Picture 1 (cartoon, rainbow, N blue to C red):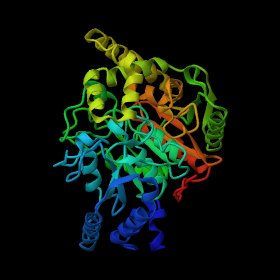
Picture 2 (picture 1 turned 90 degrees about the vertical axis):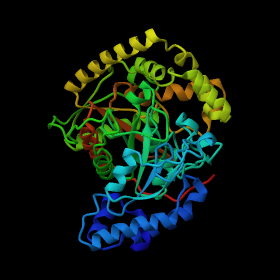
Picture 3 (picture 1 turned 120 degrees about the horizontal axis):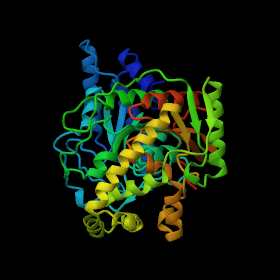
Length: 468
């Protein structure tokens, strides 16, 4: 079994290490071996230091030998994304311009992982500036999807999704402002949780303070192969940190709610593909089999409007400076993304900023009232199955197609809502899944419904990389 430790879930592995049936060092060696075997084929992890990994594992084993509790993630190998600070590593965000931004301190989420006993295995790839739903950059290169190299691994946490799908680590850290956790999970056939605004603390001392848009909408979150692992990771990652003024000490489990969910196949007229509709209907039946009432509905609070406002708030502040930085970097994906957002981003003025924030309060209220009737909403992650690699670079029509399909991923963060991608199976070799959302700080309801959907299907398992 010890040579196959990388196959286990984080929950299973942490229990074995805590009970001293296996050592943290054995788990680290298994993870390093798996990384060496499969990472060259997918390029998910762009930097790792085996000696440091082993030293972390030995520290966990030493704590156990002293009778100490090393934490909930005792010895579990975890990856971190290159856009958050990890001391001693560059916070590159996929940029040559930032390859010398060596962090002197851990970000809150990395510090929380360490405190929980996780062994930080390696740093995962992201597109330049974390702009795209595809993962490549001029500094680290391209990440491939281990399930099918012709498909995007998603973005911006594409390295995170690819690594956990291929068995490189048991939990992957990601970030999400417009689907960057949820879409890689969807594309790679694993699960991914974008928490509510204020749930997981964030701060990068190596970088300038974020603008108001990213402060209100960006979130760190976990990707994993089981819903139980997401629950464990959320518990660990969400520990308090005074460096984040948005962090909220909300309980991880809220008041009990009726097992009632709404199913919306085509929110705001989304052109959902038949294969995605089939996955949603299947997920609804899994929920019903688990005792949930699921009502199919056509109308939701505004979501398409939230997309436009989200993009204005995210990229409008300092848009010209972002374009200039992308031009200096010369990354074609970043330049294409910024060009595609231009009309919306350039619409941000002092007056429209006030109007956007005012309208945000209205939309949040409408969504909160919706969740009074339906505690959970089941809806598409994307209108389409995972895209072909670099589809967004294939001209204006292709870019517009990508943009249109991702509406639900972009819109939900504007209201600060949580979102959970649950992988439900495959269409041929192509992963498919569904998205769950609930009111703010009710990740527990998303996870409860997600576990029922997971139990009703085939659990996600690590795969060996595949090439055409």
